[in-house]
Image (tube, rainbow over all chains, first blue to last red; front, side):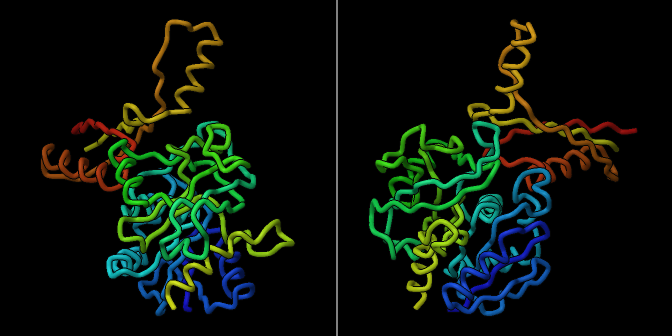
Length: 229
Length: 81
């Protein structure tokens, strides 16, 4: 499968995403410069983590107006698969390709840790290699990962199964103590209502090798690669 | 013309910065304060043939970029100078 990883000024995790896809998972993947409009024939576009445009104004607010984002929006409208990780999730929310917004962590502190995530809906292109209720351990590293959306929107997300991942404790319960950033309803990752755009704060690309603390991130990429096949 | 734009967290949205500042003020002895919200203040200059047109442009600027309507409110003032 062919992947494109967008590089914005201030992206940090594009290199790791390319490494995970190419060197670990044997996929075909190429970087995409944000000033370009071509997606290079990618079947899945990844918006990586980092601090695009220095997080000025709001995280993702300026990156969403990069030339490539017009192509990403068109690609998504045509049903193309788009994965936003961390800053990429923030950009997708700012671009209105995903509902809600990501705000300052409740603690005001930058969090850098491993978290346990419960798979809430395995019937999507992003989670189909996992099963319902399975726990994935992935790293997080962000200062603005508190997911917020209006109450009626949250209800709809819940009803339609758009909440794909939740922060949980070691027993698999979405408790307040296990919520690292104050996200409403412990939301760690959401999809759009057509299930072809997915954003998450945790980093699957940093969890694809046992030597680096775990391989749970592979499930996300393998789901996508399987879905496109 | 000169515009001043005020962007504040929307009512009902958790504002942890405002809460931290409020806690600090109370610990300094300013017990009578409450409901502290931390927002953003932006100034810009704009060429426009009339104040109404400047206001309409600033409104668009706020809606498209300066504020995120999901989580923030904005207001602005335009002064001819």
